[in-house]
Length: 249
Ligand code: NAP
Image (tube, rainbow, N blue to C red; front, side, top):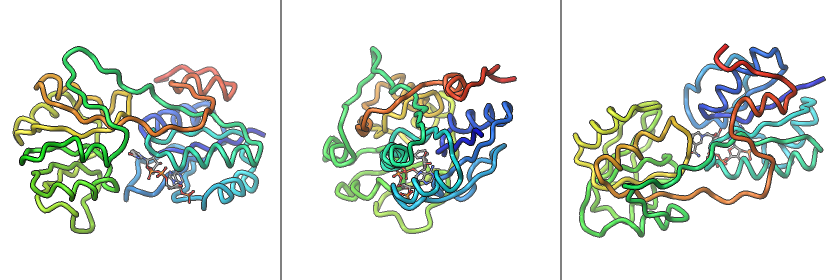
């Protein structure tokens, strides 16, 4: 009997959950538990870590999972590495649903860096208005540049004081339109953007807005993962699960 596990927490995972539910496939949707009110799903859900590689391998056996789809964010590298190892241990087929990264286009002023530490080093010393478009768990290293005026955007309000002396938080859940991003960046006189190369359309507007405003973007490239089977569309996942889809139906 087919029983799928979707490692989720992304817009793509939510689209996949909808398609899986429409197809009547037995499946469980797993959230990491980072946000307080995760988007409702048409599938049974579970929340929180599995307990590393062995915890996930045990879970796969216990729940008799036959297919794992890793639809986590491209920067959720620990979860993705664990999924590769646990699926190998439990001999469970794994497929990643991962959008291609954004490509630089003419007019983009990207400074590509490998990680958050390199992003901090790429910012100017002089005071500037910086939009940090990265997850809250990655902002602490920017405390090394306390002179900057940071704008941050989170899904939930921060529960603890931020490690940045001059930080203004926007609480909002994407996706955002180009118009809204342009307005936000103009209103705050943003001069630098720090972003991660997530790919896809939901988070792209800030990159398009930066190009339109001729602003530099410090673009953190994706963490490297071991080779794994990977597709870019919900339709391709559904084919892997042995189903045809009529998207949007
Ligand atoms: P991470 O650093 O790769 O994962 C850290 C640990 O959190 C994992 O080892 C696992 O714990 C647990 N975990 C992560 N995703 C999980 C999931 N979907 N289901 C169950 N446990 C999960 O991940 P992260 O960057 O913190 O991301 C956490 C979640 O937020 C993911 O679902 C991801 O898709 C979503 N998300 C992340 C970003 C981002 O920027 N990274 C953006 C949007 C959404 P155990 O080892 O105990 O199993």
